[in-house]
Image (cartoon, rainbow, N blue to C red; front, top):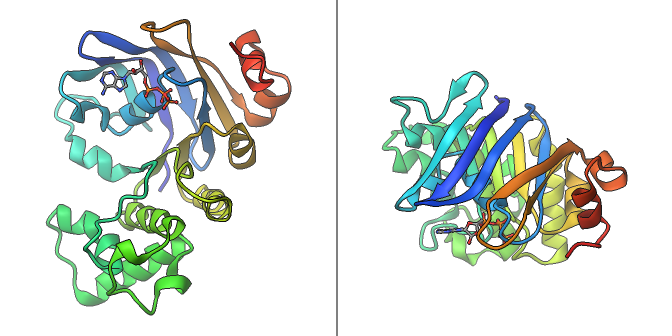
Length: 259
Ligand SMILES: Nc1ncnc2c1ncn2[C@@H]1O[C@H](COP(=O)(O)OP(=O)(O)OP(=O)(O)O)[C@@H](O)[C@H]1O
């Protein structure tokens, strides 16, 4: 598990609008990468292009190559549903299925794909996934209760359990802590550290301290003005980005002199 992500001259569009232009990046397996940058610079848009979630918006499309190891996820005949199995996504707001039990939430990826599981296989997946999401001990005695009965932080860890249940190679996270309190945020940050032992993790965050805490590498995106496309300005070791970036725009942004 865990694959390299390589974008080659990737442009991301909403209809005719070019939202992100010319991204070249190579993200190594078993690392955490954070995307930072001002609002509207295309962090989320680019993130969503890594598992073809972008194209659920009518008219949205991508040009260039997006490779998972050596396979282009936009290649001919590639089924986006399979791509989303390999590249899981955790969203800003925890979104467990509210009426479904905790157990069924974990298994939701299998149910949606129509895959049948024996009871013992399902039990094993539920325990492994909830343990992997650092949630097992808190919920093991109430697996049949609805997911909506959990706290926000627990719900987000349930969503992470649902993502890892289907054994992806890559986990994308779009501001996964922005709706959480500081304690729950720390729990997710600790979990991200553990997830990178098995997965390639890419996280969008507005919180620069969080990027500095959780990531090995940081990508800074910027935009020249409203209506202009966002660009990846710099991608380097997180320590370097926050202490001695190569680009003046990055330096201005991380030192708070932006705008
Ligand atoms: N569904 C959409 N349809 C059309 N344009 C969109 C859509 N979603 C985003 N955009 C545009 O694409 C550009 C990039 O937006 P995006 O949300 O990716 O930026 P971001 O860096 O993630 O911003 P934020 O930090 O505010 O979340 C913006 O100009 C935005 O208005």
